[in-house]
Image 1 (cartoon, rainbow, N blue to C red):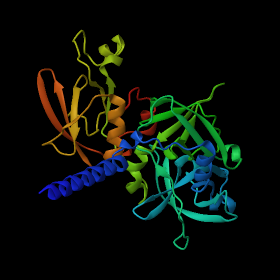
Image 2: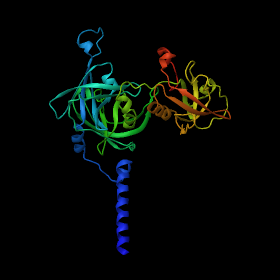
Image 3: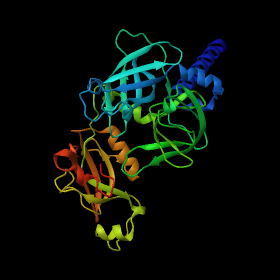
Image 4: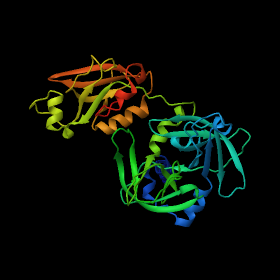
Length: 368
């Protein structure tokens, strides 16, 4: 009996340790075990998967374009998903180009690669090696656990200078810029044109962001697309252009309402609780006739029976909407109008079918 109990206890301990190990490596609890590396170790690892990219236009090379666009130069990195290797960079590095060449620091070789897909809204692009290329190095992607003040590193090709190693700190983890739907990571690491598309790396060697924007000031700030967005968009990026669609309503957080905005959307002195408010509905859009100015958005989801994803913040809602739903998808939105709780189903359509480009530039509010 004693031996049986001892064996049972041993099995329970083994089971507990197995579950604990699984949680650590699969659900982000690995922060309990520090695995930080030295700057040089991180640099050596990053050199294996970070590349220098040149993009060109064949028609321009042949002299068939009256207004040459020049050569695109930037950075990128390799990731592995489902036994496939993908080359990630910023879309503006390869936009409107059709010839792409990459090289790595430790190889005296240039690879010609092909573009699989791109996303103009989030400024991401994915390319691929030719089928005969055998590759074995890839970046490990982070799990979105970074905090302000964390040490970060940037490897890339600033101003065309290859494989410069920079460092800094995260100074903000969610930066929303008017007109864009990305919640950027911000770092004070000094980046320049040519760093675009390159990796932002944490002290454990994980890629946490893709360099995208640089502010123009005496103390420039480097903005990066979080890898969580890349993870959500990787499948559509691997098969062509990502088309997000459009529903045609503008929103703001209720605390952002100014007296002028309240007057414009006819709220008067009505008390609005914390939430996301509809401030504009475009004629001819899917939202027209379904939503009205002043509606308080509550939740959304893929079907009218269960719109159970709570809407807490306008910017976060737009980002989630654009990374989870695409052109042609139908979305149920639950909202409150006065004392009534309503649910309407909207379909994401191509904005060019009902809105002129010159009009879209004048829209004062974020519109999904």
